[in-house]
Image (tube, rainbow, N blue to C red; front, side, top):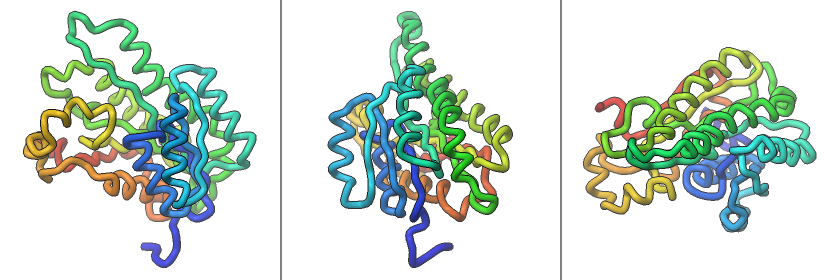
Length: 258
């Protein structure tokens, strides 16, 4: 293990959906480990609040972009390309969710969710490839880390009704493996499959009571910010250079116990 220094010192990292929730947890960990971080989101207010809160930890800036559109993807890539010669890691975390009963589930819910969660992930990875390749070294390849979900590893319980979301996250996991094989050895591509963390997306679920939910998780708690920060720093850092194509559940044992 590397001690006595910040493992991501000198690295430039892009985190999408970085204004709140898991993206903010990722950005916090990466900044604390010494990285320079760009965050993006559709909501300028979220970005401004997060930049102002996290600035004491290191160099962080933001860019507003809707990654469900090709224009948004290209605009973010252009923004970073104008400012950086290399990007050491890309965290594809921006995501959309939609819940509705099967009979009422709208076509728009497929387009919106698949466009952000799958097409946006592919498009931004593609657009930033030149900068990722520029950052890559033989003993320290560039990284792409996609944020999947435990809902892409097993069917959600009946009643969750997030049909396009779970399908999109399964797609993210398979896309991760295909990109890993395609981009080896220059770029390592892995996915994190979070279980239950506190975010706007899980607010409705947690409203029924965190303790009640925690009883259904083998480790008897929901995820903490440090749980997400830790895996992010590991996957972007010097101790994970032999891992690519992995989908890593960070879920308190939910997948193992199903």
